[in-house]
Length: 431
Image 1 (tube, rainbow, N blue to C red):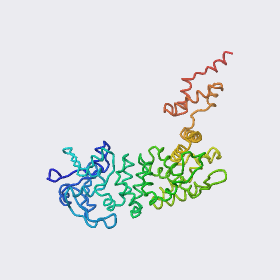
Image 2 (cartoon, rainbow, N blue to C red):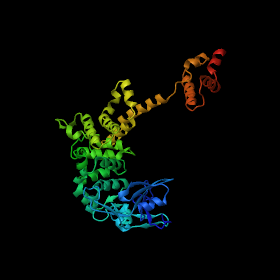
Image 3 (cartoon, rainbow, N blue to C red):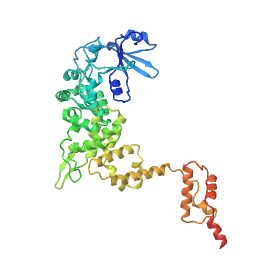
Image 4 (cartoon, rainbow, N blue to C red):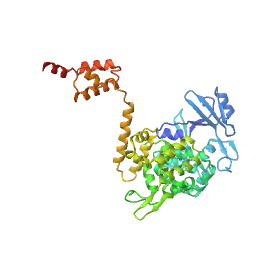
């Protein structure tokens, strides 16, 4: 594009990630070339937003999003501009959401173009809107949630004026489609700063707007002898802290695992109780997942984890066949992690959890262990006397089998004859 005389730059999250030494994912390019000029420069192009001057250019290393510099008219619905027209680079930059996403980079000469203070905000690890925050959020109300997601993902703070605008405009997030809210929320929950992000959602009012069921956990007391950490919301936030590299659905299940407690709260004569909160919580979790437009399969995964996070602890009391079925379920690894962080957010005593995890490890070993090639009867038939040595011999054969050194019964017997001479039978002949 530069060879054809056009201005062209990388823009957006890719530039931000490059400057932070992170691997960029989507690469966007802005240019002064019009769509028809872009068409003439490349053998194949795909128009995905003709009205917005956006063209996809397939290349050997991926597909590039190439957009003509543009400015936009007023946003009448909080999502779509009244009009879009081609404009200057400066006008294009000033319509973008956050300063750290409004940096331009020229990969040919390594120059960074910064018209909005994005590099300073990047150095300060700060999320700030380009220009007036209320104007930027009015253009697309999903940006209210995106600001918090970016802060959680990058470990950044949110600039005061930007944060204040989010608080004022939080109720308007409900005007955004459930699918777009879902995608931002799941990305937030899968990010390293998910717990801080949840706290930002609470303090801005976004949590009450998009997940009132979770907001209802704030201030709900728990019995201090079991939950010294505090209320249900605090417990949930701490559970999210202890999660390690979760899938978005596991993180959502952790967020919702105690969502039934506000409804089942009961102050008894001896202590606070939450009878049936797991089953009630599963029903609420299903409502939340459907409202967020998760697929049926995704909803079932989340709901099942919420429903069974208390049943997990009854494994030692289950009949053997039922316990085996429970331990062998496909989602057991996720349930194991949910219950681990549940305990870590309480008293931290993982002894019962370790017992159940050990049962799963033993079951897995049994399932993966192939049938033995020889038995004690084979050893007796070959003159070996029964005794403690049998275990040593049979275990050695099994090790060789698992390592692939023996594959047949004859190979196993040959290994025994070679490595374990029949000392006992020789001794019996000398008596």
